[in-house]
Length: 93
Image (cartoon, rainbow, N blue to C red; front, side, top):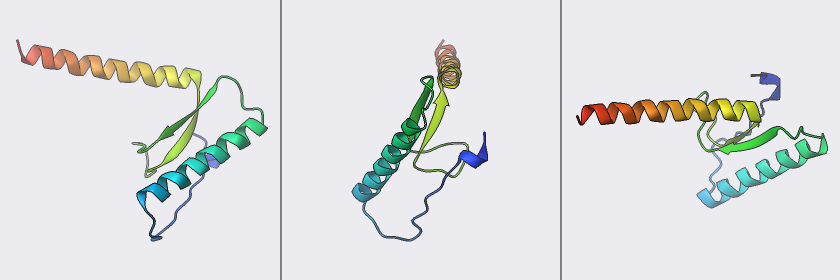
């Protein structure tokens, strides 16, 4: 992952409501999507919003993934779910 392409917004101890936090997060996502559109983002890239990213301290964010990366992530998740399901079925036999 190219760390030069990572951006952070830290509001510190600012007291805001959940609704305000959601609104700020949505505004950031919209601004990023607009700017990426202005620089001719390739058609094979999707912007994926998330609430918790397990690979780092990010809580609210957006990731630009190429379709091949999305497919690879989906296959990993499907394999994990299948393994978990098989384990549950075996434990009930």
